[in-house]
Amino acid sequence: MATWNSRGLRGSTLEDLINHTNELYRQKGLGLVQKIPTPITPVKIDKENGNISLAYFEKDSTVDYIGVVQGVPICFDAKECAVDTFSLRNIHEHQVNFMEEFEKQQGISFLIIMFTGKNEFYYMRFKELKKYLDRIKDGHAKNFKYDELDPEYFIKPESGAMVHYLRGLQKDLEER
Image (cartoon, rainbow, N blue to C red; front, top):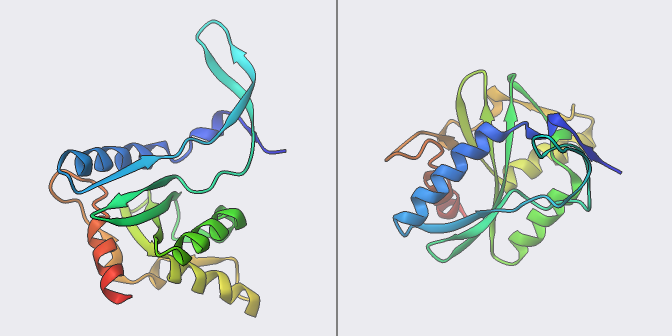
């Protein structure tokens, strides 16, 4: 069974930026997107300060965020990468399955990847993710390189939103 410890907060910087962006979108009436909490059961709690130091995951989570933008249902996961090679081991089969089923229901699924070493964000379309996953079957390594990514889908800060993913979403919709 999977457990959580202090490493469980990896990605919190990216999530904080996305949460801020989502609140901005809500305030401007552009969309309503919520962070989906991962259900955990605490095992060790530091009673002095109330922090959970060890817990286990109750079940596999789906994705980090679900919501609607201008009538379009979206779901996405946030991932961080410190190097120029992103390991596909960071994306779990149950997440891919959920995103695929979401797409079949006319929703839009994607990843937001933060390349922390470059301080850059990337909107990865679900079909692009599937392309990288499918090539593993042909013997390719379980990763993709930063240089392989479509320059059109890098996310630029705009109007106070550090992770302004709506531009990527609009381009994604136009290409469908």
